[in-house]
Image (cartoon, rainbow, N blue to C red; front, side, top):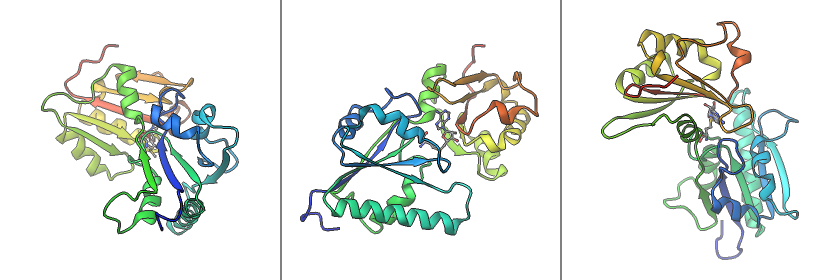
Length: 252
Ligand SMILES: C[S@@+](CC[C@H](N)C(=O)[O-])C[C@H]1O[C@@H](n2cnc3c(N)ncnc32)[C@H](O)[C@@H]1O
């Protein structure tokens, strides 16, 4: 992209885990001056949570472009959407527009944005002048703060891992680190609970779902959950994360 011909710019902003006032001042300032904003939806036809978070910061003139990343499709179909959205963003910038792209939490952590980044700046050694990435508050930072559970201290190690990883990888993380953040818990909750049980960590683990949203719920000590093995699917949401800290006494 020719950086000197136009003043178009793409701003990629982390909008935090849910609460509208957990975005940075920088992101709020940028949001108020955009020509167009690209907002994701989890399911076709549903409102974007990321969009709901930042709606109050947008100027009336800002055009809203909603797109749907296919979460359950095969890789070819997913790649086609990433190609399309990356292409659209590139065109907007080439046309001199100020373009926003928002992601939940932080854009550089387990975010589909990174697949677009690969398409937009592949081979570049530095961040191009037409792109700015604004960090956001990650879900696990918000959960640690809301539950007063430290993420790591002094010489302790912290692993951040997606529960979509192989069971052996998850088990190694639990064995090798003092503190562990388990993300994308939802679909594999029974397996994760078994692993924590096997390693005697249920009492050092805390799970939060929908952190900072009105539907937020927190379970301290996963040994005594108020729902049965069969009820977990309705009790949890996709936005569920477990923090484990082997050196912290959880208050009940
Ligand atoms: C695709 S990842 C996005 C991570 C995000 N970029 C971040 O910085 O937190 C989705 C996972 O993040 C976690 N997550 C995101 N928002 C959350 C929330 N409000 N409460 C609890 N967990 C959340 C869950 O583990 C969820 O499965």
